[in-house]
Image 1 (cartoon, each protein chain N blue to C red):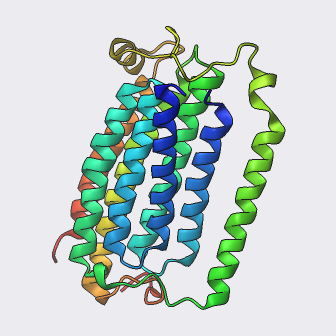
Image 2 (tube, each protein chain N blue to C red; image 1 turned 90 degrees about the vertical axis):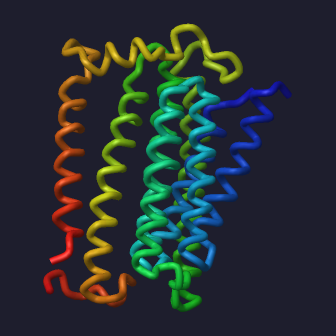
Amino acid sequence: MIQLNYMLIISAVMMFAGIFGFLTRRSTLAILLSIELMLNATDLNFAVFNRMLYPGGHEGYFFALFSIAITAAESAIAIAIMINVYRQLKDISVGKLEKMKF
Amino acid sequence: MDSYNIMFIILAVMIVLSSFATVLTKSVLRAAAYLFFALLGVAGMYFLLGYTFLGSVQVMVYCGGIVVLYVFAILLTRGAKDKLSENTRSKIFASALLSLAGFGAFVYAIFKANLLTEMLSTPEALAEPSEGAVISINEIGQHMLSTDVNGYLLPFEAVSVLLLACIVAALVIARKR
């Protein structure tokens, strides 16, 4: 029987893999990939808590749904910013991004 | 060992391995490819929970949209040549230690909290989704566009405005001057 705990551990593994990537990566796009991993772990947690602890309601379900929509918007903006930064600096690694305004 | 357990193990292994590969691989493009499989694994978990619409949204938005967007961005910025990092060994070690410590704290909290026995009198097993647990498309539509206690009309409209603003802003930021 699949318990709630196993699901939570899987999402915790995803979360901390994302945190490790966030801390060690140098390229900003790779950092964004790590952030996607963390956001997915939280979405999975919302769905799992809703399904297994409170199957009568749908709050976690809709929170996950809206979270996916907002994540899509966030990554689109972040990628636009990264492409713009690349046009200006020809490099998107965090070591080179020192000025906020060009 | 019923089919739910077998699928759960397959998806769990897929998610864990792809997550590690995403943050450990040398090439950013390859990291995006591994992220694709981690997202597919999460979508499979949603299907396993009985949330088929959420799983479909995950496949369409993440696997179909965001990963493709990332691949395009990586290729446009010549990010494919970026290496993992030129970090010192001590910094990688410290990051790994921090992540492991946090993970250990999480696992300890999960098992200490004993959620199932305390919060729910009859534990919901994953094997067969009960009738009330799985939400139908009809119900999703009713919830999305109703204004009563369980309605989500205001966040729905807010997200639509957010997406519009996001499209305009992405065009403004990324346009050629």
